[in-house]
Image 1 (cartoon, rainbow, N blue to C red):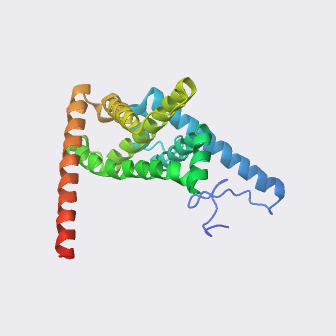
Image 2 (cartoon, helix red, strand yellow; image 1 turned 90 degrees about the vertical axis):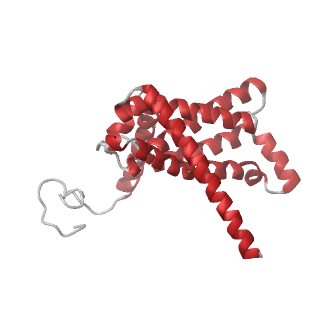
Length: 239
């Protein structure tokens, strides 16, 4: 009924719709909602747990075709970024209220920069993925698969730093400073890439380590060149 294909079996071979299509009832609407929420929660927990325990093998499974068990990397990343901002707002309510009283834009003043930084991480991961793709050409992975690997680990690193932040707030009453949080995130992310690289790239740890450092350097060089070129072009246009 969805795509007009001849029905073979209990599900359509073309679009996947069930053959048991009935008139809508409220019980079906509520059941579909609960099923969707439970499926999302299960996939989220399954993805998070496997990224904690066996990140390289999990991402390798995903890129090789196991797409039902785990959340899409981009979806997981957006979910973790939203969770991070939510936790920051929850544990920083007094700071948010203070900022709101002083400026009138408490929530966005306190968290919009964090959102921008999180999105910037996802953009910076693109040239890193391109560098990894060039350095791992023998592995026959696509550029998108390298990016999916980094995106999963980016999200997991944000989650780990968010947990550390919560413990810092509970223990000391204050979040980590911006510089400390940035360095902590970089350390966690690099550790994740090197640790997971053994299973994902199927190579020795030290191979992944030097290639990761090389991809960082390449990204810094390309980023610096693009920044300098952009400033130069802007100056030419202004003059």
